[in-house]
Length: 181
Image (cartoon, rainbow, N blue to C red; front, side):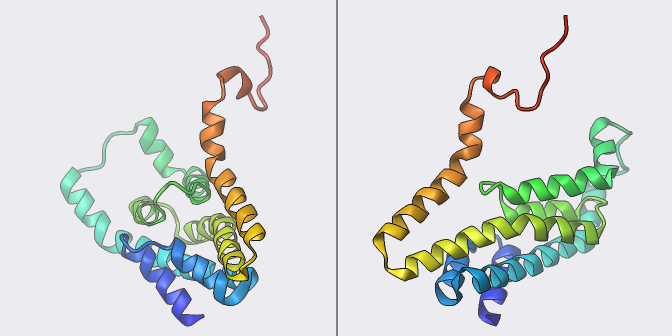
């Protein structure tokens, strides 16, 4: 478990190292329950290290490069909202095609409180950790039918955001009321 947690943390801090194979190995070795726990713990530790590195080293360099803070704009107001930043971190953790590493470093450059980053990351990383650990557990089972169903489910979950975006706009009006004329 310590090797899995450490490898996951290292994969987050050192961006070129892929974390998905580590998560699947955790699932294969420890099952989807314990594997999820170890993967989430490693991802959380790695995210916090990346956040702290950006906070300690990156803000000073960024301010030196940009000079004084820009005047108040919509983006600047967004950057000052703890709730908006927390929701943004949480939402990006749920999207499998966004770089976990870059989000962690970028969040460290914002005024987001560390405890908010920690909570948003932990809650957002659990679903992906479970899916990858479960996938690894299924691969280790040797049952071809179970592996096939797992691959199909993982592919479906990964492609859902693209499918939603491909829908015509009239079908994407989820929760919107028709305008009154």
